[in-house]
Image (cartoon, rainbow, N blue to C red; front, top):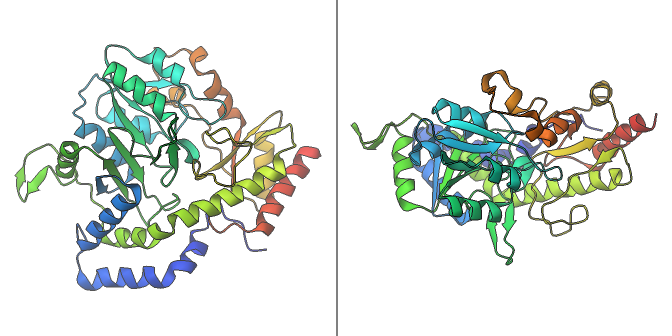
Amino acid sequence: MKKIQMVDLKGQYGNIKDIVNSSIQEVIENTAFINGPKVHEFQKNLESYLEVKHVIPCANGTDALQIAMMGLGLKPGDEVITADFTFAATVEVIALLQLTPVLVDVNEDDFNININAIKKAITPKTKAIVPVHLFGQCANMEEIMKLAKAHDLFVIEDNAQAIGANYTYSNGTKVKAGTIGNVGATSFFPSKNLGCYGDGGAIFTNDDNLAHTIRGIVNHGMYERYHHDVVGVNSRLDSIQAVVLDAKLPLLDTYNKARQIAARKYNLAFKDLESITIPKTVNGCDGICDTCDCHVFHQYTLRLNGVNRDALVKYLNDKGIPCGVYYPIPLHKQKAYLDKRYNESDFEVTNQLVKDVISLPMHTELDDQQIEFITSTIIKFINE
């Protein structure tokens, strides 16, 4: 059995090596490293894939979130509601812009932001909601958009973990994650479902005026060289990263399908264990249906019930099985984001999840032998 990786980028590279190498070599020979034609080519291809009017590439996913908020004209003191159970980048950019982060609890079943918690948190100072499409599936965007419309709020989708996932409205209409709100942001960090070989990110919107503003912001506020019309930043996707992403983009659905197949196999192995709660999809399927398109499994995350997680992590590591805890500390308990406004009773789900969750290896190169070894090792630990 080959060595188990949390994310097997080397194995994935082996299957696209020729096109990646030749594309990188072409960039080097043409020396168009920044804002070159390859960046624009990738941008157009991603717009077509997502069926969104505008994709604005940038340097990383954190910048994408920050620039989206800058583009919307949010002002210091404006309140922005987001999930407590996620990576710090989401709240980090809110704080960096001197906005007021308002953290709320998440759902037990899909780990995404809780609609009732959002309703409770809205005040006259609220200006935006940032739903995080955690672990690979969308938050309840239909309800979030209704709330936003009723309260005249912006919606900024943090789509760093769910690119390629579909969201299905109650009338059956399907749209790609990240294209529903006023603006969406994603990361192309190497371990993402669509990852480059360095840092990268992008912003999505169907709003022509917002897209124009954001295009200036990412390039020092310039629309014409040395004419700075808006306050901007230096956040551009380089051409080498663009060609890597363009090589992977036609394979994204295949990559996501491989993740779904691996997740089904994990679920099948664990489905009868009372001490493990397997991931559920937002469409309410029993497990992961054969036509699943709502979850792209950036992470495969279990909830443990009455199992010593730390002991399990050590046991797995000793057996050569990597695993992760996403996330071990709620954002409202992080030193940088402590706030006396928060009441622990408002974070019951998050406070429990951080004690219970464990994420298993999940990537496009997982094979049956590896999955069987991972699952049997976990079951053996639980039964001992």
